[in-house]
Image (tube, rainbow, N blue to C red; front, side):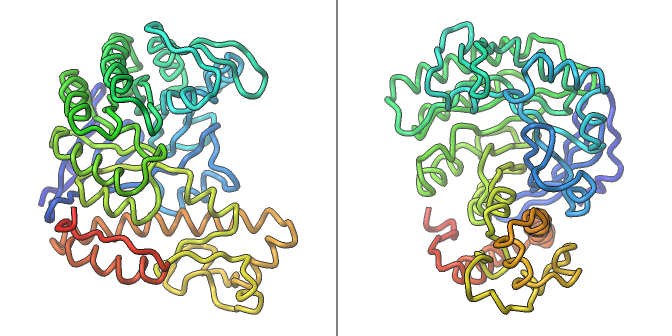
Length: 391
């Protein structure tokens, strides 16, 4: 095993190193200008330059190493100028570690009245109706001005279901847009990731991998999943696509975030993930534990003096906040409930990723994921076969 501490970040270089493999899973580390990122790793979503309900210090205390912000929400001219005047996203949101910005493609393509052309996408902002055209070039310029470490190519995210002919055309358009993105000069510390599309069609996914990876980039992502296709097809896409991505670059699975989905995706060979699930579920009163999910508003917790998870080392669980107290806060309308549960969920996700990294380093991945299925999924009263023989 290599010592990743020997890595030194240099301008223009995203230092990536695979540290260990076990079965089909792998763990590694990459360095941005703002620090090390251990993989498998989970990024907290801070869409509008803030993770909802928690401070940056609280996010960092959970073990989170990367925060994601979104170009669609930050592309309004006044917001982009404000971030620039404040010295970039890192200073603006007081987050000194690595930041990734999405291109805005997912948000744009989910809007009902968008118009797609070779140039880009024309739409109206959902808040003020401002007409806007987002192109590969303008997405790159906004992300350059925001100053994130990792910037995502502008792609077309096709929902499910979709006609194969349209998905095929979309794959070609995504490739042409990527080539345009790659011609835009970024800041010295920034790194562009390409995104593989192709819907649920294996042939189109393979075509997209070949075309996207023909553009030499620091990392690559799988997009266009978790868009309504269901866990079965999601697994099919990820297991088919991940092994085709370069071994010597980080692999990012976009928008996937249930714990069981993360385990499946790590098993397929993916490295980094993001999703609003841990924070959104927290605000709605659902906490993740090693024995499944707790819906804290349930009346069975009204006198429960245990913490959310007796095996958890987060601030919420270690400070004596009981399930009964958290339930009380939710019903009392106190925002502290959302803060404490968000801290716990983010901490659980980082613990989950750390446990996966340990299992891979110690070459016991296959056994670990079976134990996870027995402990987490059985308790959660969900049935999901994670064994690769079931694929």
